[in-house]
Length: 320
Length: 308
Image (cartoon, rainbow over all chains, first blue to last red; front, side, top):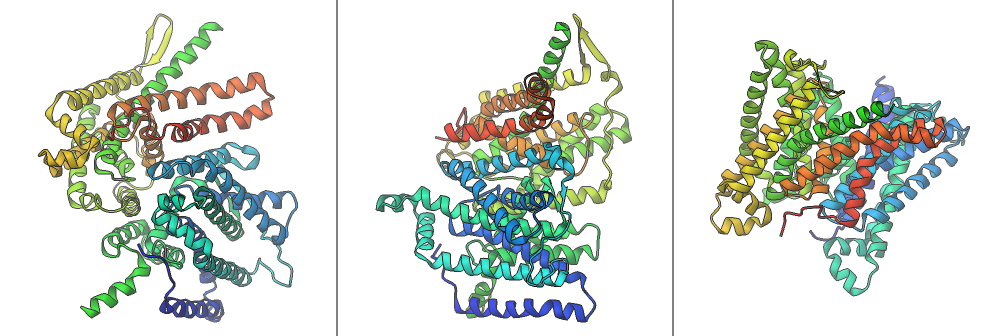
């Protein structure tokens, strides 16, 4: 796998998509299809979560099967703070980021001492532990989850209760996260991380503190996941232990692989593809998951490097 | 008072043994697939679910639990073989992530297909009447059915041991788990071996599903919760090792069951009721994962690593 460099096509494509996303709610409102605004918000939130996983997976080369735990922790942090009277997003959301980052620090410090399939399993184990912890703590909702009394307040005249305002805030967060990820990947830190992914032994021999770099990458990814959790709970109104169950981590992995591992926009592409597919199929049948499963299966064989690699595939086919 | 405590501990220990043996049926297949073909198969739990559903239908239509079990095993084994030949075979040379994606998709597909055929509501798999009563030895009472499960589980473990340790097929399996390329070089027909291993694994899943059906609910998604425990088992036991799967599943089964039964009581004796009420169940659920994390940290290859 070669080093990631964002191509010009991708950058232009991304700007076009951004323009569409900016215009979308206004169009939806005009056509009286307001429901789609909250659907797209959900897509963007999961896009953020999947992007954070891609940081660890695609660039760091660490297959984490417990990423949903960081999303869930962010959600619970915001909800618990709301219960304690903290309404401002300026306090709650950084707190969510901090909590998830701390959890990632602790979990990463232990897990990163293993590798390969064992790393997969140990990250899974920690996520499951957190899941069962939240299930058992009746004071924090237990199995039923903890409802969020109201969306956080942002001040500045922006009411998050308004779906359209919330959408733009989510879009801003996602855009900032992608900018951060992009800069990170092309920075010295990013090059070292990718070098570690390519050949850890060599990087260690050269003298880089490999463990520290991997841990830093893991923590940054966890922090971003915490932000997505904060946004998610504002969107859904409920922090639930189910958000930490292993199938959720699996779904995030599926999104990243579907979109393109190691591609900057892979997370967003995968989240969009999966969730929109689900939504479209659900309109026709109760058994939407069957269609989703079949499409995913087809993707594994037809587009092995994910959706983001499809244009390259077509270009190559045209050249013959 | 002493008798009650002994009754409780003995009962929970036997429950743990029973659960562990059923876990073993799943873990054995899973560890072989992971160990020999190096494939992460998330859909393994779905085979367990399908086995339970088929058993439920056959039991209802025919009235015979025994027939239901046999039909479930046979059908699921064939299904497993077909799945392997048609689909999973193409995933062996792919990376783990693609395998996760594909088998995750299979979970979605199989859950939905089961919903289409059997509906959303959990299905009843009735415990055979002859076995539903309690058994008593010397003051100790235990359900007959659970004892039968223990018996079947032990028989299956013995049969698997015989197969793997005493037959040529077993030798091929062990060779494949230890060093696949060498085994191939030595002439093992790897393609058929894989299909057979997968079919056997599927059959074992179905047996576990059919046996556990009367005790747990036969419902969509039952595969996911037991699958995760099966993965914990094979990590603890050592990927690719059936002996490891047995040891691992007994440890997981007993620790989990005893933990859930005794920890809340133990905590209540020593701490305030508030703490015990929330911490007890939490700790009990977490125990298994704590154990796995500890083993991954100190002895990642597990107790009986099969790979050379």
